[in-house]
Length: 316
Image 1 (cartoon, rainbow, N blue to C red):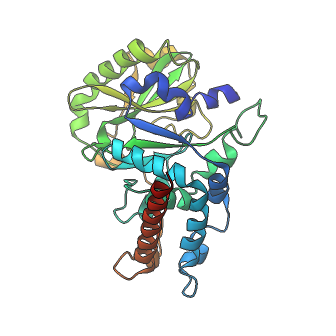
Image 2 (cartoon, rainbow, N blue to C red):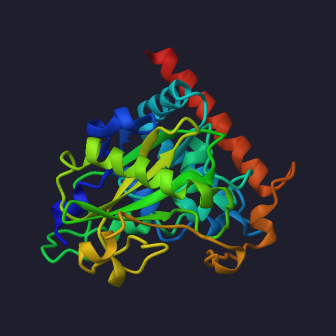
């Protein structure tokens, strides 16, 4: 794998080219102080939930935000332009592993403080910040030249069973996998063949000659009216999950996988679901009741954001 192949999968690289077939997104460059804030290995929980230091993290958070008032205002404008709710990601990854810390258990955010909380609490984002090029044989750096915050429109009605990961080898679509492999969706059984045709046609018409890598993966969502939307691109192999396949299978000769068309794999019964990631979460981390440390944190952060916005408007 080469650095160029990894770089092409950054959302700020591919989204401008494919935005007509993707989810509405607003992209903001992250200032270095905020990147360093995310990299701080003390973590939010080492201070927030200790009984005598519950207020330390909000104060630290506010200090960092004072350096970025304009950026926060632009983030707020982007959230409003996308309907009031978004889900965040960095160059490659979304903080899916920290969804549990949200008051609603998802990546849905309606404020900068909620976005920062998810980003700061995520271990998976360490990949973007420090290890994006670890699998590259021509590695020259441990991090990209710049980091971005991508805010993607939140759709409440999206069905997890309609998202798929597609595998491209030598510019040929060789495999399609159900993205959510921890659940059996009976409706997919009868849609399997039609989904293959939809996704394959979409690939040939819109991606095959436009995405420059020979080997890569892309995630799509199929809408109720059979439109295909690009959700993400990822490099071939390395940190990308093969889901219902193994990389050994996908590395086989394309003709072996494609004799009967593109190989589509879905969970075909309750007994063959794949295990998901289980995370044990202390109860204090989930206590969002009025008066809890979490409740106070969100109140303080939102109040400070409103004050900073008023100050910025007064000085404009």
